[in-house]
Image (cartoon, rainbow over all chains, first blue to last red; front, side):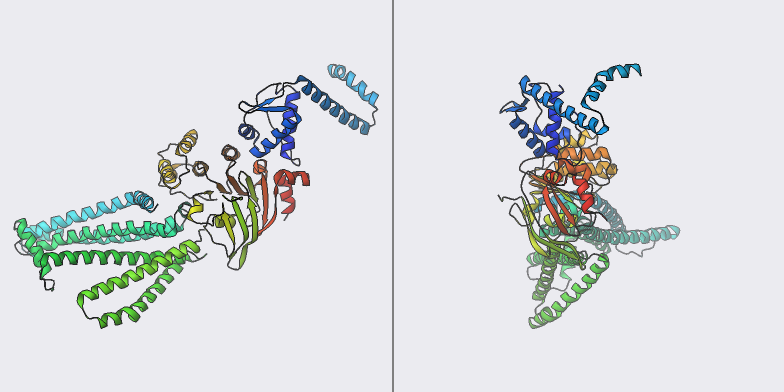
Length: 124
Length: 274
Length: 233
């Protein structure tokens, strides 16, 4: 996976976000084996302790689990992943609607825009 | 650790020193040719050959003597300056960042520079002495004698040195050992004097080379005062020739030790790599 | 074994009336990558030299794993100075030999492999290498040790971006929970992602010493951005 880090937010939090994003978008499939902490840190260009902290947090959330001898894996629970997808989708919708509201659109008008979006693109 | 440092020191300096050894080798060959030539003339350097050949051979002889003397002088100066410069660049220059990061005390660093310097200088001195001896022996009349007589000649030389020899063999051996020890201590003295001067001078931020020279002079004065205050009165009180020699050596050793302590302290507590 | 791999207390150093370090105190635990961040002339190099006994402080004390600086601590420390320290007439092999002789924790095979990966001939004399390669060789020597404390003085200054990545990569790869790396630099943006903790130093005084992510959270900015604010001219 490719890593992009923005300034201002703690690195460990951004790692958590990006791994989560990878999982729900299918980049990291359920049950996939993760590389070692050191390898992941090297790929991401971050401190191994920071990577460790993020992974521990993800373990706490259940998105990642570790088996002592075999290493770390993405959860096999499709339910958990779907739940996360939904949560993320709802958040994205929420921020989209907030933006549209600022532009003066109602929720209904925003919905129309969405439905007609594909058609408008075809006509251009 | 000291052993490793010395080994590393010999390794690092060997190419330069092989060059000097080659130069001394050339000088020795010239000396040999001169010696043989002189011996062939029966010890009489001014012996006349006939006409033109005589002029040419005299000129060649002169050139050979000059070349020999020059090579010796040059090599000595070069070895001496080389040893001092080695101390400076390796311990006080950029290489110091590597050397002083090694898990080794400054005292060991100094010893590792001093010992090879003394060894190389001594070897050079011995090589030069042998070369000179070869020439000088040629000047003794009737040198075209077999080797056993040659050895007699050497004894003859020693006997004419003014000493009353009761047991020639033992006394010559003792003299040789004493000479060797005072040579080593004398060389240690000279080198440590310079090392200490540089260790102090280079603890400053600016004008380090000039300061080193200043410190050198100061240390010379200090050791001179020590000599006149302690050792000269002492040697006057004890008026025996061989004790005199030992007293001089002792004085030299004390000064060398003093310089060593100064150099080590400054490298330990006042190192100032730029 | 001390709790802290590095303990600096009240370090003060003056040169010709200028105070280069003023009462500098901080402690580092094992297994951390710490950034010593400050502009040029803030005292970073002076502090690092004091830790490795290339300088002696006028006041204060330093302890490396509980031991005062000396020959013993030098075997625990792997130090990369901010300048070339090798004799050009040495070959890489000879340099590796030197490090092997004096440092029990030096891994010669690792060093040889890493130099080989750069396409550098082990028998080549160092003066025949490009400046960039010479610097990489120096870095490889330092990182091929299994030391307890690494002191890297401006490792990425004046180095191209690819080399910078190489260096940062080496630091991450080399990471060990037993060892601590102290990186001094004024180029924050390139290294901040690998730092556990940051120490800001200005004109010889420590301004802050904090966990990097905590600082980001607190200020809502990157460490680089905070640095620019704090050290605004």
